[in-house]
Amino acid sequence: MYNVHSMKAEEFICHDEVMASLEYADANKDNIELIDSIISKAKERKGLSHREASVLLACDIPEKVQELYELAEQIKKDFYGNRIVMFAPLYLSNYCVNGCVYCPYHIKNRHMARKKLTQEEVAREVTALQDMGHKRLAIEAGEDPVNNPIEYILECIDTIYKVKHKNGAIRRVNVNIAATTEENYRKLKDAGIGTYILFQETYHKESYEKLHPTGPKHDYAYHTEAMDRAMNAGIDDVGLGVLFGLELYRYEYCALLMHAEHLEAVFGVGPHTISVPRIKHADDIDPSAFDNAISDEIFCKIAALIRIAVPYTGMIISTRESEAVRENIIRLGVSQISGGSRTSVGGYCEDERPHDTEQFDVSDTRSLDDVVNWLMRIGYIPSFCTACYREGRTGDRFMSLCKSGQIQNCCHPNALMTLREYLNDYASDDTKRIGNELIKKELANISNGKVREICRDNLIKIDEGMRDFRF
Image 1 (cartoon, rainbow, N blue to C red):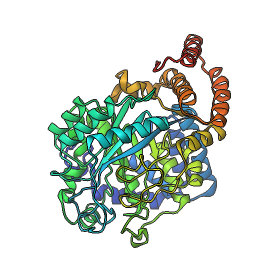
Image 2: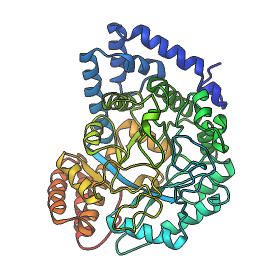
Image 3: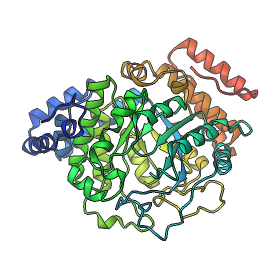
Image 4: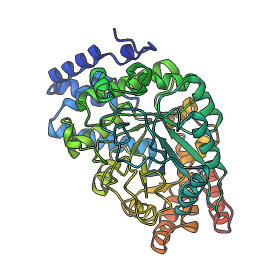
């Protein structure tokens, strides 16, 4: 029985409700009157239900699809402006006891080199990331209670925050580790993490159990209910995601929205971020073995409709995707991207990109400076801002500001100030030139006169050597 308020996975992600929603979508995908009414509701910027959004995903009327793309682009601008937040993943360990058939870290992969960073190696990796210009990391580790216990993760977080090299500092550590206990989520909260991220991989329970045949991740309910435990433990910001290609995309999209609705209904705040990874080639993983792969066109449509259905959420796309795909999908809703990423354990200290411990092949191999330069050339402000997390604007406080549009008074000037830090400390000459021209132009777009003047003064102070201003 479907119950959005239930704390049981199979009730808030109810298979029968997903199937009924998909059936309803098929029956109404050409119903112009209904589609127009759903689009009209979406224009109110308050989101859509999983069933309404499923109708739009099923609709393939060209002029309506184009209207959806235009609406997604406008909603993205309304909530997030032209800012793109930058981050990098940091892989701590690829030891794992799970048998996930789509991941090269699975326990049966005997030829992959297994590696776990020492605290000294963590510090060197963080120094390398700071020297690139990063301020925000997402730490990753396989699930292994012996090699990667929660104490190891906490020690790594402490090390990361302590490393200060030249003008560098990691100001926000997001955590992407396996589902754990409420007690351990409290420990992560106390360690000062930003967002807790956990990909569902697939919401289809039968497929989930086949794709995770062995190991603790096999437990569908424990995994799916992880966000409830995290939020009960006080973690305000959580990040959802599925691995598109494992199951039928329309099923995943509907269930993903149901999960967002559940969090909003129970905790009063939906997901801080939604990620949209697609299965990619990796060490012993051939993506063609999975028969639910989606085209670039469908991928972009999914992103646009997540933006329309959950307008307040941040959307993340990684270097799994190529430059061309990332450029197309950013305008449809993405607000965070990785840059200069390496998906191997200990990869940032190496001049040549190592491949022996990679979780997946990286499609966009450009440096952070190249990505920052590219973003500015196509009209975006690369932002290294972490202010909301450090000012306590998380959870429902962030969402209320985001939904009202007031967050722009903070995010826009913070983006400009952190970009100036990057330009002065790390950028190439060409990137610095483009960036300073962009800042001058965007400064004039700050509508609040007082905020604009403070930002202008802080930019001067940054040029004089001061750092870490924020609204």
